[in-house]
Image 1 (cartoon, rainbow, N blue to C red):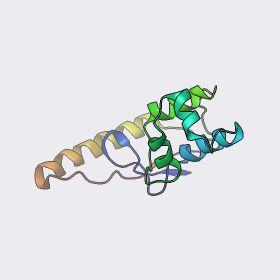
Image 2 (image 1 turned 90 degrees about the vertical axis):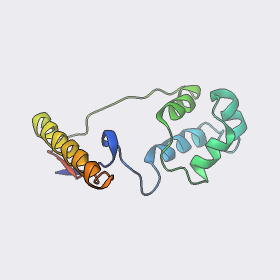
Image 3 (image 1 turned 180 degrees about the horizontal axis):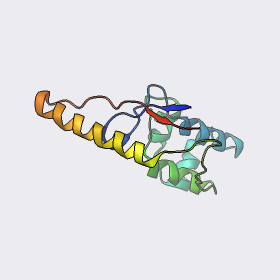
Image 4 (image 1 turned 30 degrees about the vertical axis):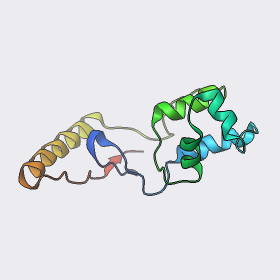
Length: 125
């Protein structure tokens, strides 16, 4: 059984370490021989060199999806989505958990002005 930790508004994940997509982009740039020349990546993608530097060497933990897509499409890659082997989602259970969390969040915001952390969702293998 997979445990997926989801917190925050719109069920977003707040990365403690860096989002693994940063390493995937780094690997693409290294394989294509441009990782050491972020100026070239900037010129091809339009993403600033400071943004790229912050992904790989700085404090950025979770880059914007549109920025990641600008870089990978400039390198000739495309994004694909595949279901993990053996993972089955119970849509009704997830909807129920989502409604419960939204109600708890609304109540907490009324009470103390803070949102509670998102509880773990359990995807069934």
